[in-house]
Amino acid sequence: MEKLVINNDEFFGKVVALLEEGKSVTIPVKGFSMLPFIRGERDLVELVKPDRDYAVDDIVLFRYCGRYVMHRIISIKGEKVTIMGDGVPQNTEKVTPQDIFGRVVKILRDGKRAVDPQSRCQVRKARLWRRLLPVRGYLLAIYRRLPWNWFWLRRQYRQIQQEIKVKQTDSNEN
Image (tube, rainbow, N blue to C red; front, side, top):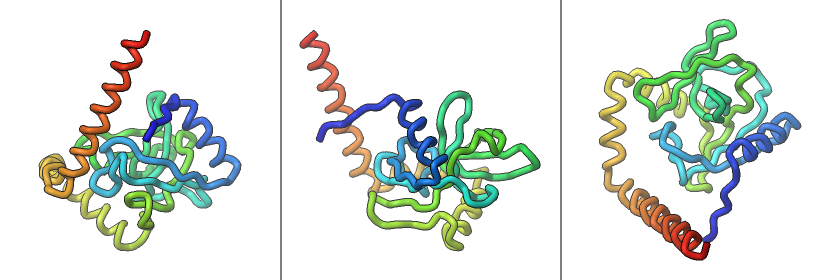
């Protein structure tokens, strides 16, 4: 399967434009910053332009230090919104509502099973996870080593190896 690589700013520029038009956008997730609730390279998220004010526990797409990021709101104080990734044990981002472009309304596990991130169960899990912040780094380390993650990690490793081969082939042709 071939991969199409698109410039991040160009991709998210189109996503933000579609959100501004009032359309919902489903995008793949990359990275580990939202573990264990959203897994990069596996899950998809559906974003919408918010139809209400942002609230604590919303998962949002925002721009921070020139990059587009998707994390969870952990507090709102006036015009200061504090955001933190579920898979991040320490760092937070402080932004204004103008830096936020979309809100996640659906998580598609493996691109199939829909999960509502605002359901009572999911919000309860997220709040419990936030209370575990002092030990979250240790829990994430254990989570990444669990047997069901090995297959996923092996697939990631194979994918990286294939990308390296493609780059080597391209450089040899030049």
